[in-house]
Length: 231
Image (cartoon, helix red, strand yellow):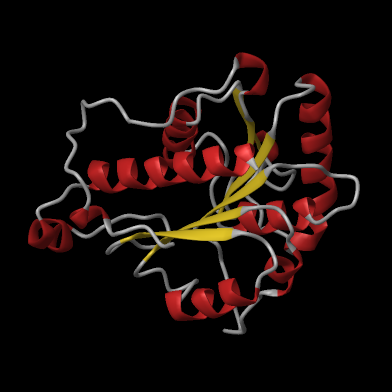
């Protein structure tokens, strides 16, 4: 079931604690491997903020971030095709699984990182419990819908999408979700763009704040991950 827009959810101030389900036993706490998007590294403000929110809300043992080679060491190069990043990403997942034996692995990603993460989740030698897509880039540069990877998924998959994200029209995502084999859910950030940023006029019209919208998103993520780990 899709989550309601933030403006219709319980109001919560910036200083309030994010509510989530009770933490899992320590040995079962999830480990999140969190991949950045095409244009900014893991050290960006956006990635650092969401890393912190995910760790707290999911009671994660760790949230592992990394930089793809084309951005590592402060490099500013154009990203290669997503397929060329799969091997590097999968090696990070395998190293993390070795470091945290017995912990459920969650593959999370921002935009391109979520697409690569889905490709990694489809690999035969990778075992993950869920996939989290933050701003999945469903439309390619030519406007075509890129749903092949999503249709191959068999692990629970959560989408968080801005309602004004031009890279992922919600009607096209809904069509894709209906065709997916994997259990999946969608949380919509009402008025949000590709990075969930909401315009001031929209916030004022709905009597809400950016912080409330992000809290609503991570609460929806926590509920989905909790259900997925209980399966």
